[in-house]
Length: 337
Image (cartoon, rainbow, N blue to C red; front, side):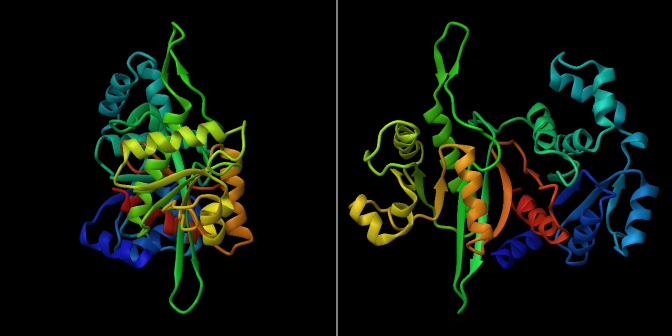
């Protein structure tokens, strides 16, 4: 999977910004990315501190650009732009204070085109990575929400790989209708879930997956009632209308989605049942639990969360990540650019 992504990166060089430039895991991954000549690297932090941390860990970051918000020559222009983007919700003083933080500063570097992509979260929470992205980069045209997916990859031997996609596993706790002040529904819960499915499938394609999208529930084709059944069923209909080019079906149980004998018994004639490789969960709980079961018990390598719906590639690391995960997430993030 990564060989193909790396080949694309070398053909079209991009730049990534890391919000935590003194973190040893970031520095290790950055030195490796630079040695492999995959992308330009920007590290945020005081230059002396970043270099000292790199020297302590034995990491060669000579090719990286180090930017310290406290001494950045373009800070006044950046503050002015952020005030404009926040539309009176933050004063110039508030914007300047936020831009002293790596998460806001790095996001503005992406917004201004200094960097093509951002990877953060080694020490920041997911909320602290997503919030500046929503405020400054915002959602892309046509997107109504930010969601996430994870790419799962396992080598089964004899040169056979299985790559899967699961969403949403990190952002949306559940799905509720959006209602205006008059009580009118402006965007339904099912439309939101459908958008997650379509966005996940489109990201799956980047990783060589020919997406067969299953909207999951505890019911297959109306066999159960209540809970998330109606939500997943309606989201399936909407997603099919939004993306007729994609192979989508639901609602279905997980066994019907992955086991051909079960799929064709419970959902005869479905092009997805028994063959699904892109799974859309109706709640974050089931999605997060599901992918971690695949990772810890199923032996899959998990890459993500990959954020969906933003106007630029910005991704979040787990605070428990290691340097190898940072390296691979950087490749994934820049590939989205």
